Length: 168
Length: 368
Ligand SMILES: [Zn+2]
Ligand SMILES: [Zn+2]
Image (cartoon, chains in turn red, cyan):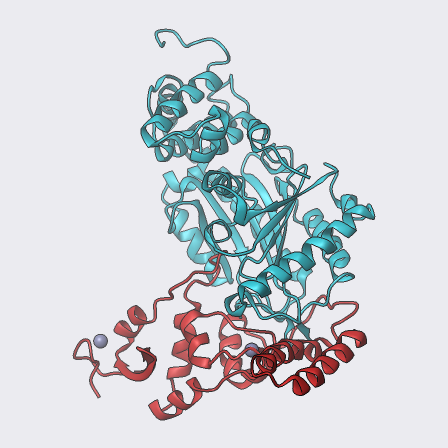
């Protein structure tokens, strides 16, 4: 397959979002770099090319179908899709590190060379942090239940929220 | 507690006082930690009401710590100022950027956001920047160890009040995967004019990048930094403890100092007249110009700063020169003048400010 912007062989198969519709783009390495130039930059600019790096990682060894499927995956807690993360280079909530763990791993290896934290740990809260992250989902669901006037469900969720809050 | 930017403008932060070790070349040492609350979405996904809630929670917690007399332990300046960044004018936001108390992104963002600053401007906490919390401690000269001790203590205090997003495998969870793990960014700001003049700076940067250190110019974009100020920081945040990441940056500084000093010696030895001429001309222009841009000022002040350090210019002190780098920035000039100024008025005001501060009270022979 040839690059869509020049005549070199296309080695990057990227799923882009055009008017809300996923669309496949096939590019050579040079054109892919331009295409993937990040929209926003890390304020400390330590790794401004992160977003491009990320998409590269994903593009290698995956078919367009696999990528398109991956891009549609959504975090159940904050609702971010993998495609949205790829576009902005920023995650939506702490749970994304769990939900997209497999996909993020090659990226973390590329950036840090490691995938296991060593160093400071919080003296408290750390252990049930993931459970508390579920509060993001519960608050969202409670709001939805109220909007749908499903007050019974809303009150169930409220109790669940309270029990998590009290446990912390 | 409210803060009067006009009064603040006359002084400068602790980190510019040139009081720390190696402060002829090392301007400042900074440690920053990225932290998030575990029960809120990251900023990119947060609604305005989420942002307001995060801001309120953190505001209340920080005020409680202050009321309990805990936070000033790390801040000899005493009082803390809580500033609602969203409510500031553009000039005031720019003012905080120029003092390195907030990032450009934080200044330009939208929605509920704040910054907490201690009286000595040694530490600041940005709320709702890229992460919910960006804690920073800044010291004059080469002093990473103390900066880390202080920020670690502040982090401990905050952590008693809130639940941070954290997991055992990946450590502190951040909005961008480049910060995950320790969430730490250790950096030193260096003044490297001789390496720039002798065209060795790119070579130095390439070798830094090979050992996973990031380099960026302080003002302006890219590797050609304006004013020859460069910030060196760790690129990796995961898989190494904080102390080791700190050491990685700290270990390379003496090497860079040695290179810069060698380059200065070389210039003195091989082309003292050219160097002396360059420095004297820069000083002459700054003392006599009637209108001058911010870019030209940075460029010339850099030569003057090196000239003072090499003993080629006698009647100016380094803290004065450091201060001028910040005071001649657009927002500072306007605060010091007490009025808004457009660009051409700023250039006139800047020249006048420089003449007043570099002539030791008396005009040089033949100028105004
Ligand atoms: Zn191409
Ligand atoms: Zn999420």
